[in-house]
Structure formats: structure tokens, C-alpha cells
Length: 73
Image 1 (spheres, rainbow, N blue to C red):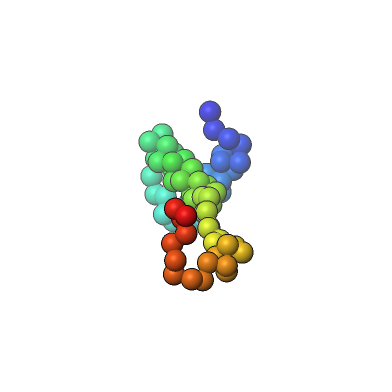
Image 2 (cartoon, helix red, strand yellow):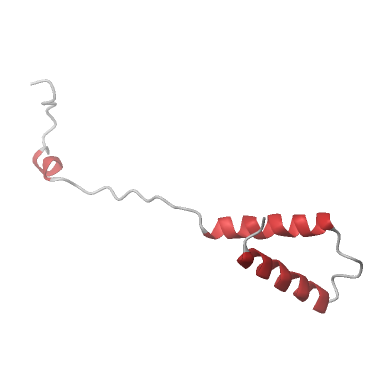
């Protein structure tokens, strides 16, 4: 089962290949599967999640400017 938007992507990709002369023989089922995998990979690439840590200073860091270790006191 293939998503409809992926079908459209593969169809337009095949059409571009044909119009540019890159397709000269009949496209096999394995070729279609390979194209589907590439399209799927490109779709996942655009949906990658990036986590950025924004480390902000707290008021505790401002107060602890001395070199004493008050952790155990």
C-alpha cells in the first residue's frame, strides 16, 4: 500500500525521467520499488527532528561566584 501523495511524486519523477530521455527501456517493478524507497527516504529526510539545548544561566550561578564548594555544607 502506497500513500497517494507518494504515488504522485513517483509519477512526476518518472515523467521527468522520460521527458529528459533517461528512460529508454520498460520500467520494471524492481525499478518502481527502488524509486519508492528513494522518495520515502527523501520524505523522511525533510521530517528529521533536531533538538537544540539552550542553556541559560540561573540566578544560582550568579550567586555562586566564589570558589567555595558549598555542596556538602
